[in-house]
Length: 312
Image (cartoon, rainbow, N blue to C red; front, side, top):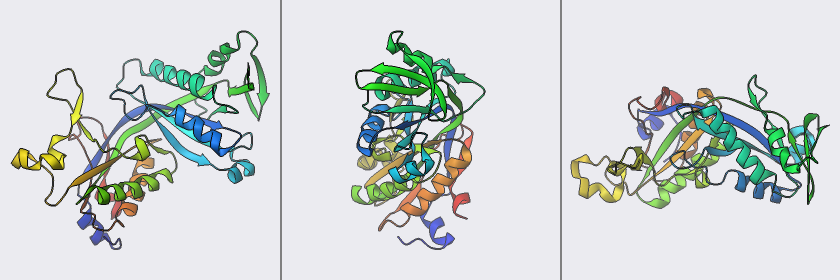
């Protein structure tokens, strides 16, 4: 498929919308002595955070700051860093307390423990969590307040030396659940398109993807035939069930694989920009059959991202 005119894109992209829903999220900046140790830290911090179906949150990196950018002032301490978001749906009961527990657990267990890591707040909001004080209690009364790297924070003595983190961590409203589907004749084509899209999202500010490599191969629908499950495989879009389901199948002719990317971010505008970038990147995939999106008729959320509006 060659990108080009709006007409060509509209022939490839379904006239539909992705259905996002509101979240609250926290955002931190993690730095480390090297890119290697930064990657180790990030992998631990965002681990098991693909979907709130069975994870405590959805987490991912919204920005990588390389050594040159850091040296130019991109991080408070001049070291490579990563900006990480933690999203919790607003419909979660006691969502404020839930997000605080998520951030407390992941900062204390995955940042504090990583050699050379430091942790900085990224959201200066009126409401906030006093996570610095709580994490610092690990210091067993040897912890102390200090101002370093232009920020007030806590210093915790550890075997590796000292761990520094900000005193306060803010949070604000965000959006979860933006998505795109890529229909290919086989797995190679669908995955190629999704990889291009995920890479474009990674390069868009204030947005994260949370699944492995930014891609979900097991897109789900709300509900299940098992009454104890809240989600299940989207059978109508499973290519291998096309013959079994007959007229109930929604898989287009010739489609052998469908890959999905899911986006969370700062606000609806950020998700719209990321979705636009993803569509244009994926549209360059040879032999791609369709680009579409999932929704529940507006029953899940009110943050709607209309695909054709992004390419007109």
